[in-house]
Image 1 (tube, helix red, strand yellow):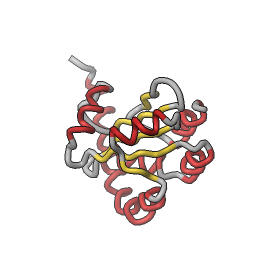
Image 2 (image 1 turned 45 degrees about the vertical axis):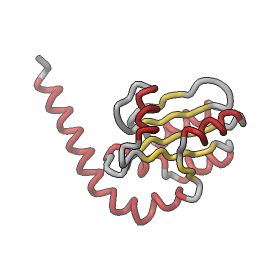
Image 3 (image 1 turned 90 degrees about the vertical axis):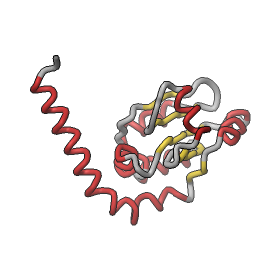
Image 4 (image 1 turned 45 degrees about the horizontal axis):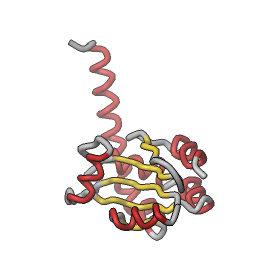
Amino acid sequence: SSDPFLRRISMLFSLSLIIFSIWLIPFNQEDGSSNLRNEVNNFSAQKLSSLRSEKKAIFVNFTADWCITCKVNEAIALDQDNVKKLLRQKNIVYLKADWTRKDQEIASILARYGRTGVPLYLLFPSVGDPIILPELLTENLLLDFLNKIN
């Protein structure tokens, strides 16, 4: 059996995250999420394969409209000006894999990386294996990962 104190802390954290998300989402839809749209490409396995063969650095955001964690990560990390600027400076292609309707192509890629759902964030250097980022992102954490690749 688990420690009741840890269980309370975990529940408090989860509740805080949900409340924060509910407060944040309306602002994100009007302001933040549209800012990055013109720099984001829709994901397909074929597009990923093509970009890999061209030795492009790629960031893939596996997300869904119903994913609260995804929305929070977009608001506090992915949609920040410093992140967008660094993606541009390093010529990192941003792909968005929308799993809102549980697309089978995306599901098979999630499974390949040991996931049954979103979020999943993959950072492909121009050469080599992808880096699997944590499910919870911060701006500084994401900037650190982006700075590590060529």
